[in-house]
Length: 239
Image 1 (tube, rainbow, N blue to C red):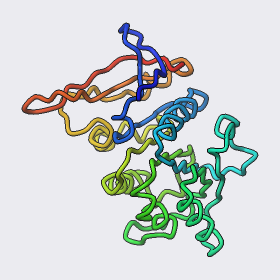
Image 2: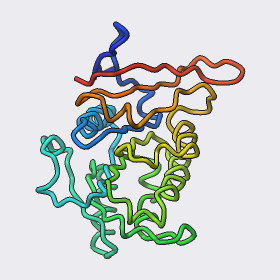
Image 3: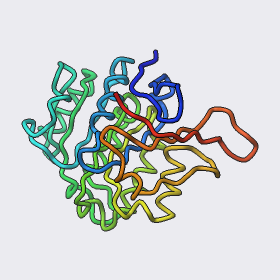
Image 4: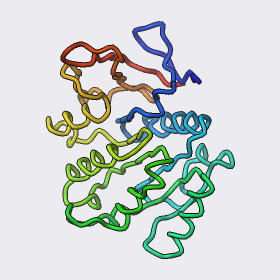
């Protein structure tokens, strides 16, 4: 199955979602209003069309009325708000058993304040039934205070998570200064592009200058040399 979602600025080729999308990780960096959720929703619909249920974690903790209408256009939308109650656990287990596409609002304050303590939110995210059956989306927010004591710690938590999952993972975030840290860039290059040594690291000031629904696109090619995977880079315009 192939789905065209955009074009490239410097190529006649089209940007397509393919079977590989189901298993690779995707990082979407962009300012508010840049089109992150528009792109994420295209990936979400592709994954669902392939018969894989999705878990969309929105850490802005919205009520159902605050969620963008593009996510609520069909019966694939199933809303839950995370809490630590038995009622929530029962509702989540039922939704997983029925293969619902879950849109979950979550307050990041539920994360533990220390990395060596696993919160109930972390335990829920790493639930074996979700790891085995679901494709994940993490929608990060500008206020990072709830993600452990430092945002960097949360990124290493994501690193652990994606190594446990069967399917891919899409992470949406704004290009704040944290992403200029060389260690964070290295981590995200490893997570989203694979083991490689010739990646062109993203520059957040460049990302901020792009038009709506326009992204700096990097893609790890399948053909490998002895040392690294070749990285394809271009500007992608999403339909």
